[in-house]
Length: 321
Image (cartoon, rainbow, N blue to C red; front, side, top):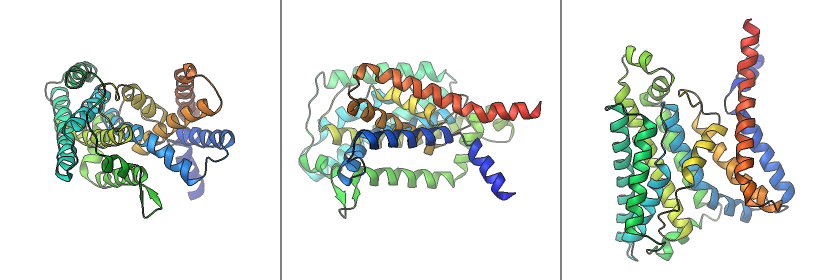
């Protein structure tokens, strides 16, 4: 009986479609790239995938609480420009740049969260407006890619810990640990409650506005982590480097089983969604498929993920008829 119940829970898990797609993507990559399971390829993949996975976590938190953040990409652009403008060879300047990046990310999140939570402005409009402002500031500071990133800083991102764990993987482990700690706190249940039904959450004594604000601040932490990874990966500041992350983070969340209605899905699913999108690019490259079809294939995966995720719900509705 317990086995049957366990299988039913797995079947109804919103992250199951993304897990199956991820297994399929890994299989296809392994077929197209014989060296796929080597340490070198594993490391190179995560050097590229880690920023998107972190941004997917940030977006997932906002969607789960019942919102959406269109300013994520522009935030990353501005943060990379900021760090590339501040950093010098001294260790103190590196620390200052990273601290300023985290501070600015939290300030942006506070701005978005305040207007959405307390002013009750539509998340789509607020974050779109923030996107325009942040992108404009980034372009004003650095119209063309440039700035300075010290070699030890970006070399550290491309290094290993004890010659076993690539630094990007360690960053993802830290991100998971942060979310694990959050999952043990009251705010975790409040985020899902508010995203599922804000009025019911308010009736049960949850401060809905404060919960949404906290969700944006938590999201800002992962956005800052992603920006640090991006600037380490590119070794430059670029006002346009983060723009693609806006739609990709939303796509990763959908693929990962996050419900746009809020209150459903998991951060782990969003991480798998980010990994799937990264692996998709590999498949297109090694299959010699032009990048023109990248968005098309991304759309197909989203539709397949949504359709597969609806199967348990449809079966459940039929069983009650």
